[in-house]
Length: 176
Ligand code: GDP
Image 1 (cartoon, rainbow, N blue to C red):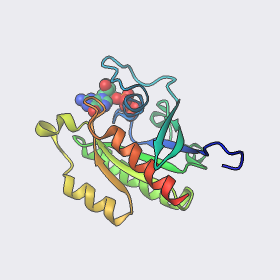
Image 2: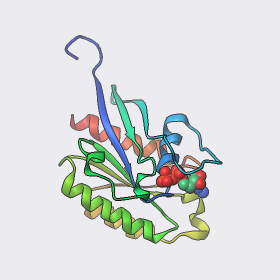
Image 3: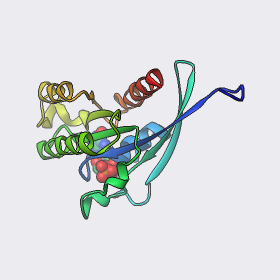
Image 4: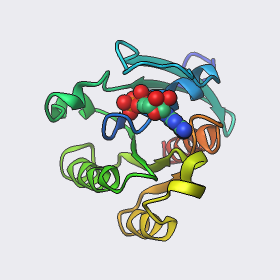
């Protein structure tokens, strides 16, 4: 950077999706490496940070969680204003949550920063062998049509959680 030290890029990342799909659990898995087995509904865990190294650069994520506000009313655009990245989460085992994710993606495409990096994340993959309601093919097709990164993940097992943040980081650092 200009002062001779390594440049630290900062990224506001918002988590979107229905209540109960696992937004807070994904954030906690990424930041603390833990799955809080007996978590109550999210109260307070509204802001977390995590720094990653990618392509020899440092990227600091400021992660905004909804803190359950999606229960009461639709989120204000100010929640995602200025976000460089979004993870839109649905529960693979609940098709309503996928429909809601589709709505969020459309809203982001209309209202958010033009070059926002969006991940479509199907969470709770650990339950999908028995309870799957959204096919991988349908979700991937929607992601491809809309220029989204796609992953099926599990905050519980950790499957694909770090990977999706690293895919975002890679995309952000390589286009900066
Ligand atoms: P949020 O409302 O979207 O933030 O969802 P939470 O993170 O509070 O998770 C809602 C519930 O789903 C909690 O009981 C979590 O323990 C559970 N949960 C979250 N992620 C997973 C997952 O990957 N697998 C399973 N089996 N349960 C999960």
